[in-house]
Length: 97
Image (cartoon, rainbow, N blue to C red; front, side):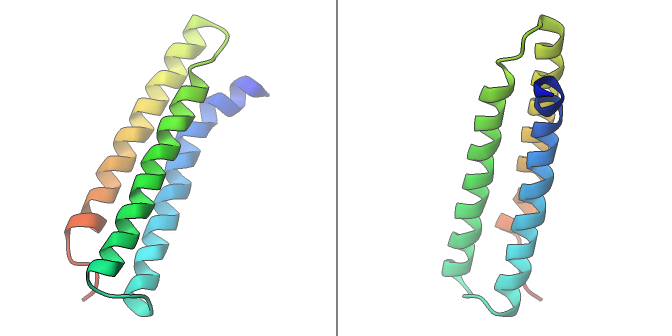
């Protein structure tokens, strides 16, 4: 079970952070604070997501076999790249129309 969790954790963490941050973005557009306060909240959530990904990377590197370690490292790097790539538009573009 531990190996399966290590394989699934990076992309699952990305999916959860993606959903949470874009849900937060929608809430900020509808009822939350606007301007710099809203952007600061999104920036803090993005920083938390990146830190969670880094912690997940540290945990998955403790795999038992070298082949599994290579697989989970690749998945963790892909998930970290996906986290950065999907959070950039929400941080730098206008949020609400």
